[in-house]
Length: 288
Image 1 (cartoon, rainbow, N blue to C red):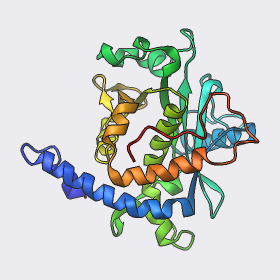
Image 2 (cartoon, rainbow, N blue to C red):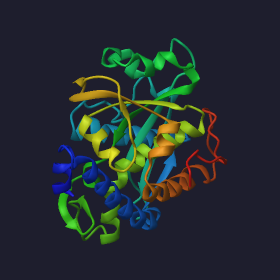
Image 3 (tube, rainbow, N blue to C red):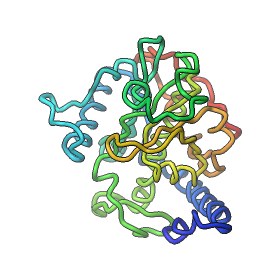
């Protein structure tokens, strides 16, 4: 896979290589999706207790591991946008530990800008797809994706079929290890699903171009809206909508999305809140 990636941007053969990589990733996703739900469970943080668990994980990753933020007194990382965000996390079932989290920031009125509008408006050069051109209740931003260190260390080709994390084999089984590289992908899928299920069809994210490129290999094609800027590293503004997501996702990852949706929206939501109008019984508009 590393060799293929090095050829993906070459003239003439680049397109063929990208299709080959997408096929390999799609086939592997079909296998992973059969095991993912046995070990990892996406869930919406729909109670105060779950949201505090998310804030503690974010503190661990952003403040203690990556040092993007200072250590907080209460060991929870949160900001002004969290009150109008839908929070999601993935739990590792065998240990009960959180394996990752992401939030979807919403907006309902003009004085509730998305972070990309408040801090990075100058990064948006393609005005046609700017968030201020759409109804406020239809826009959202994917933010604060965090995967803790023990679920994201890389080991090239440690297991056949995919690069996996460098984990302690005494703690994690081989099947579990094969699922872990998909945690970040599944968090992006979860964020997209939360947005579409709550009728927020226009999504934005600030991310590294190399990450956007990697996501494109599995059929998640974000549109870059401008040149990279300095924002916690070199990041660019990206846009995606429901039609782009629906028509581009590869078949293998559609199966994985099925599993994610089932866990997110068919779970018992009776003991939590639904402040953001998520249709838990509905289906994401993807051609299954």
